[in-house]
Image 1: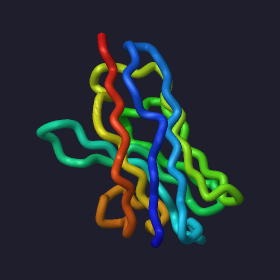
Image 2: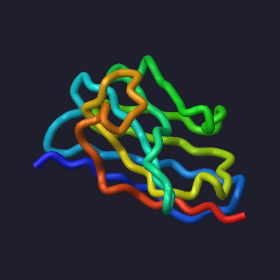
Image 3: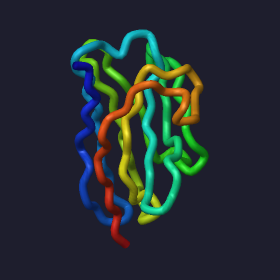
Image 4: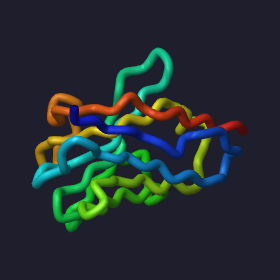
Length: 123
C-alpha cells in the first residue's frame, strides 16, 4: 500500500530550525509535483511550498519569505522542507502531499497525503 510518512517535526524556540522529511513507500513520486501544507488549530490547511518532479521549479507561500527551502530526492523517494528562522506563527501540523499539479497551491491539486508531523515554535 502506498504511503507518505512525514518526520522531523518537534519543538523549537523562535529563531530555530527544523528539517522535515517525507518518505514515499509503495510507489515512487513519479513525474508529479509534491508539496508541503500546514494546518494550525482552528485554521484551514494552507499551502507552504511545492516542487516539480525534477526539482527545478520550486514555489512558496508568501509567508515563507525566504526562510524555507523545499527539495526532493527522487532516487530516495523523499522530499524535504528545510525551515529556518522559525516563529510561533509557524506552529502547525505539517503535511506532505504528492501526485500534484506543478504550481498547485490548493489542497485539491494533490491526490495523496501523509498523516502530518507537528511543529511547535515557542517564543
